Length: 212
Image 1 (cartoon, rainbow, N blue to C red):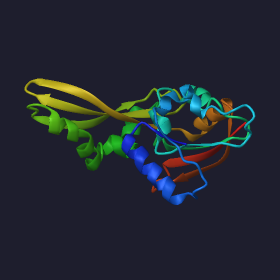
Image 2 (spheres, helix red, strand yellow):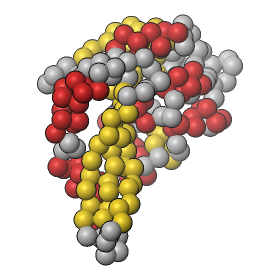
Image 3 (cartoon, helix red, strand yellow):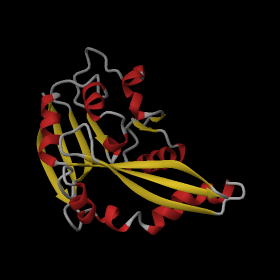
Image 4 (cartoon, rainbow, N blue to C red):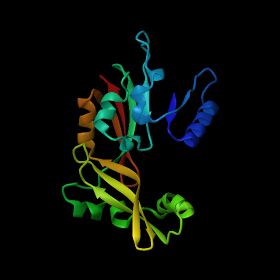
């Protein structure tokens, strides 16, 4: 089953899955919000069904939930021992207890949002905002993540109109300290089978987890 709140991404994923997978493989496209996955009875597994499931959360999905702890605990609510999960996430650039050092180390905090991201995020405001004089995209550090050692980058756009500035929150990115995050997974019943870091600076990771 493919689940996404973006109709465009879901349509593209379904088309790709149908093109790549054998015809005998069933593919479902579910236009839902993954943050409420526990509510969707169609995903609940019959008691007699013992086949393993693999839950895949890629593209930084974990960083978009309101509470990682509640999502890990309740999200895959029908998981059984032996099921797998594949989760990717970004890693911290420093100690959140030292905000100034963190701002100097994290490239987004140091340099600001990438130009391509800024133009994409500000596009709707520039196109549909009435009489806006300017739109400035920035990022704030939120150093109080629920997972020990984690912090959040809060991307915003300031729309300037006369003497007024209206702030719009665009999206957020969380970065995690690897050891506390994997310990949280384990405490909630998901043991780490393997974990790989990747990217130019090794600041991204993907973990293969097994339900115990």
